[in-house]
Length: 117
Length: 117
Image (cartoon, chains in turn brown, blue):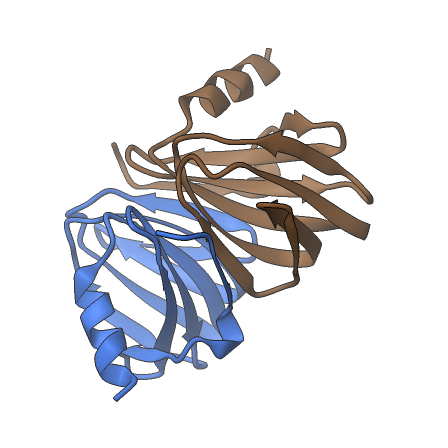
């Protein structure tokens, strides 16, 4: 892989859930996903084997784990180990969040490539 | 590892270079490092085997690879494969940057733990 430079504004988005879209950047061993939540959008309960780290950049994103909702605001970060069931919702102003996954989510790559067609 | 939630403002910083400090969040397989550049600060030429991805959040960070400087601004992202020699500098207003490394930089963990003493 070569050094790569992108403007996230130029990366086409793909749908993560209703009102939630992601702009990914795929490394060979880890990836970023810049996520935009429209006001009031929700990511339903799910889990994945990938380790997930993240940081809220704008607005409020709540992460719900084991039935406990944590409201996260700009410069709040998190680690969700692989396999932890979680859902997410945002506040009335939406949210901008950066998620990191290890390893790369090949399911996201497929969906992102499909979204370009 | 358990699900973990942090405020980066509450994470103590460690020095990366003169005028450059980082606030890390260590997962088990990947890590974040929220980096603050003071105006005009420079990270000297270096390399590491870890894959590095990142995004500029505020200000301007230039990454220099193979003698070519790329000036990166908010919502610009990058991938530096392991082993690629690079240096960085910021503009007159400083910069806030999020770096991601895979695997975890144990050298950073040691320096961060030392910085708490």
